[in-house]
Length: 420
Image (cartoon, rainbow, N blue to C red; front, side, top):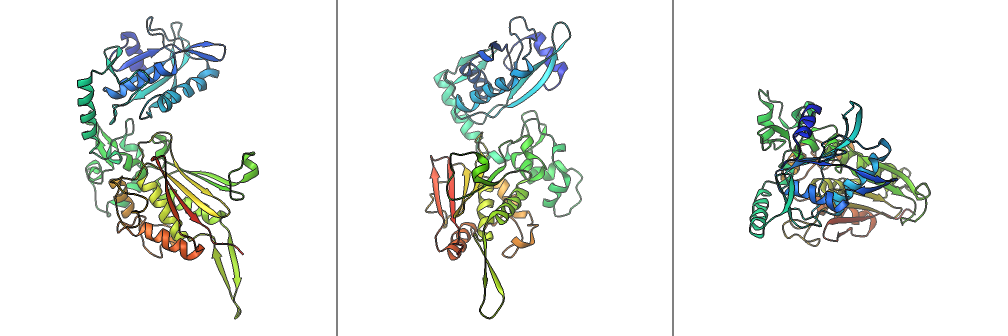
């Protein structure tokens, strides 16, 4: 939607409409005087509630002149946009924010910010209420229309989020060596048809083939290009608490683990293996036995569940792995699905991301140290949680604990074996 310079310049010439909004950014010193965070939230939410649209920051709306944004102030404008999307819109938005230049009236290139919002699967509320785009302005959605919109969007979400096409992504963003893992070596004349059956690509509203959420997560070398929160933030701490001191004083190691999901899982296990304690015991009859702090099968299952079942529609969230001297904590965004509770996890199965879990069940494990109990990443027999609980308790003597934080994040604590 309005990707090229020529398209943007033509739209600026024609002016605002149902899919296009212009905003001049005004400063007083280093502080942004306008537009306000609430105003931006209303504009972007109205696009999401309607058919989507593009907002250009740095273009005066009445004169349609490119006035630009000073280079040293671009960061402040982007921060304001992110705050508007994440703090002032419910549920939050995750637009595409792009920095580029356009010529002003004298032909000089001026920095601007382009914000693209796609039609949402949800109905978004801003400080101004539930708004929609009508021509060149935003208007409150009438109550009867709002009720229909809630019903329509609810029904559209019957198509699972991980199967939805990703705007701006193209089939060339998928790595053939990655997606061919799921094709059983068969010859392919029309890859988009097969990838569609795997739920890795789908047609958007304009009948253009695009990778899905699941397709990018499993078939792209860098899914974070389009899904910036789809990574694991791993930190190994000194001691048993996060202390309010300089990071270097209490962090032993830290890594943002990116790439396709199966590689993220293996890299997270490698991070734990590298940073956990291992005790060595000598037998009376000779020989030595190593006792690891954590059972790596349990860690593997826990990380797999965290990335496979997290809610990828939640903007600004990521899977977090925190390793302490006495325990491992794993945080996965999203509440439990299908009336499940933390108590029922060992006994029931439910998948938020069915396409993704199906692909992970087909994906081979490439680390031989993790293939003792199966050959593929995902277990669809429901043995993952029991393995986490039983293997960890045998090693440490203490049962792992699941807990929901604010009904929006599942936290798992695995206790380490005592290193004496």
